[in-house]
Length: 250
Image 1 (cartoon, helix red, strand yellow):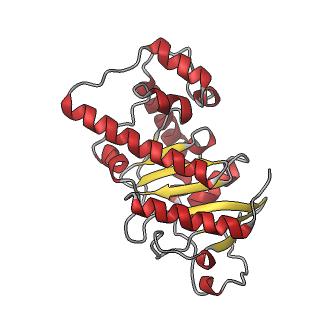
Image 2 (cartoon, helix red, strand yellow; image 1 turned 180 degrees about the horizontal axis):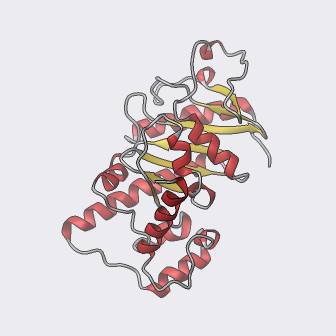
Image 3 (spheres, helix red, strand yellow; image 1 turned 90 degrees about the vertical axis):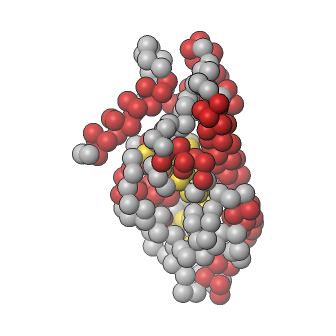
């Protein structure tokens, strides 16, 4: 795995944080971004600051066990890493292929979870192909270790996760990839909410869904979503969430 220049990565975190704020994926001090700078080191955004107005020297260095590392950047003095850092660390520990993690609060995606609706798996072809099935993690108190446990199993195979009543978690081989998945989730939520307002969802035929899955990200998710099942993909999502809850003792 190769890593980009740290200075360049700091600039990219600031730029993508600003873009997220401009698009309304964040408000106030919401959300957090992180990226690998080595096998056991990360850059992560600080707690309590708007991601739309960060400077590169405010980005913190942390180890994979969560320890804040020394920095020569004066802007980082006195700052603490995001309260959701453990959720980021869990993604990196579970996935060697993940080099960036973004947690955001996109309003329409959150609205789906507040309404108790899934981000339906069998409706939008580009989602099936590029992101795959997007499950909803059970609600936990934000900023606590429960967040880490809630995503632990799901993040093993999913690149985008809805967090019940809270937001999204997207991962990628780069910050750009994790950000593009965030955009895809919110755009999809907007389409699905609009469609539900005007009528019934017209789902893709089962054969088309399976064809798209075989060509795209779903192929990697087959460990949790067996193609042999006769149930609709939405039911498969619920099976996965139920299994995770059982493993967690809920």
